[in-house]
Image (cartoon, rainbow, N blue to C red; front, top):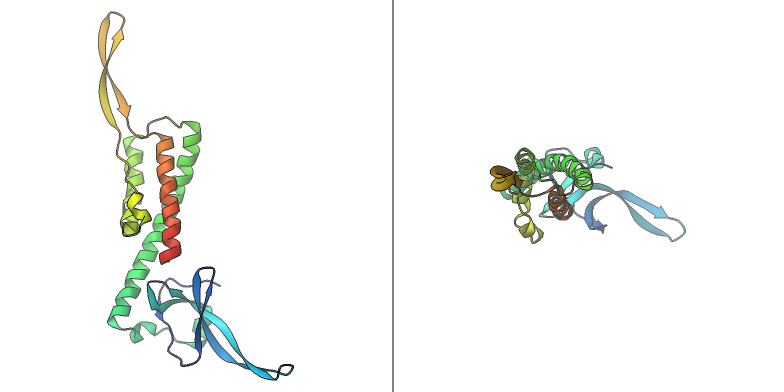
Length: 203
């Protein structure tokens, strides 16, 4: 069951809401009724998942379709100013992250292939610039995390002049020096691991 990316406040229904942790995620469950067990002669609650609790904003959740069956989407109006700010920040960060993640996956795939073909070929400036358009905002998102401190932005290659002997004459040539495809592939692998951690902790 899918969860929306727009947070709402966890419903304040006394005795009806419970939290259940599963696979490092906390689900919000709502009691829809009770059923009598004739064998045990007990009345047991019937509960369904209505949302996923947001880690950094524990009074908020990402609702699913079950939420709409029992509650109206006016959760934003019931939020405090602090909760509304947290919800807006979460939604903006989440949307940006998944957009960048899609772009990153394309880069990662391309560089893994190229690293096998030409591992020691220097990556040109244009490609480094395109990579950094994706990596720079990702690094800003994760820089407050322990694993974010180890992420680096790749530098563009530079040309150095060399003198070579061409017959009896010395001729000046320029050589491109910088990160090769194997270097960039390793760097992107580090980002991929950090992004996985970030998604698990924040999203």
